[in-house]
Amino acid sequence: MAVRAVRGATQVDRDERDAVLDAAGELVTAVLDRNAIAATDLISVIFTATPDLTSEFPAYAARRLGITDVPLLCATEIDVPGSMPRVLRLLAHFETPLDRGEIRHVYLHGAAALRTDLPR
Image (cartoon, rainbow, N blue to C red; front, side, top):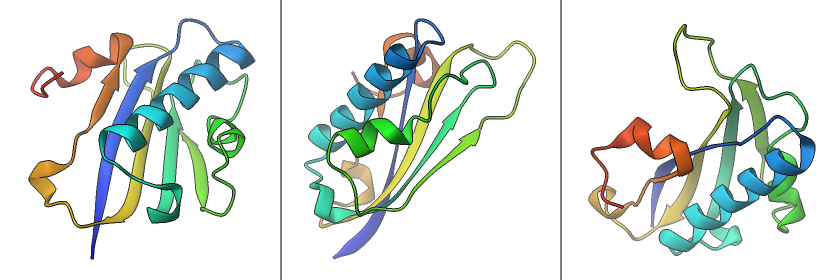
């Protein structure tokens, strides 16, 4: 079985704890569902948040979904002038029989504008 990586991002409406947790939970669920990834297939997940999102760790949303034995890491995205505000990103490593071209990266809400090359 191969180790692959999948990317995802979403834009959060506001920097409030529930909004961050809801958006991060939605993103994790969408990434897992669209790629038929079971929690037991996950190796690690890295979350980043733009500097304007500080009300909660996005990894906590994964823990609330039952992903409790996978290494999770949160970091701050670099603050590029003019970049999209309030964005959560993830990079998940997982075991799968899928080829690289079969991986479905997930960009939700306003973050869909970050990857217009991907099919919706």
